[in-house]
Image (cartoon, rainbow, N blue to C red; front, side):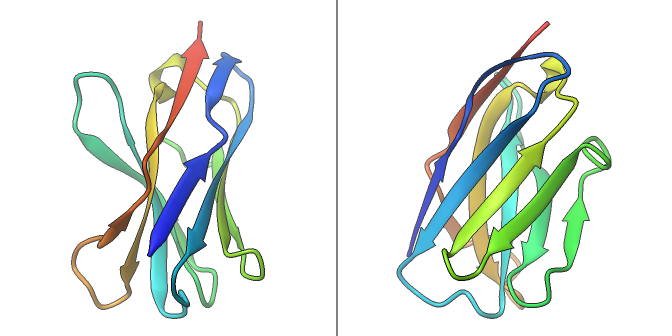
Length: 118
């Protein structure tokens, strides 16, 4: 299984950015796909998740109403649309996957850096 995150970059406060995560190597039916982020000097935090089948989403309070997770099943690609970006959103963003009954995320992408300038 491979997860390949992309789309990071430099954006101004209030701007928008869309991250992509290309998934390959297996079918993801029954999987939960998620985004995490790790800011400099901090622990990795949950951003949001989406159930590959059914589309149910969950978000961290800090991003609710600003970030949206979606997926293109045919392309096997997960997206994170980020609006109204703030400097505190600056982090390396990772995509991850786990089977819906698993406690931990088994598969991780390499991360993509998002920098929000003030």
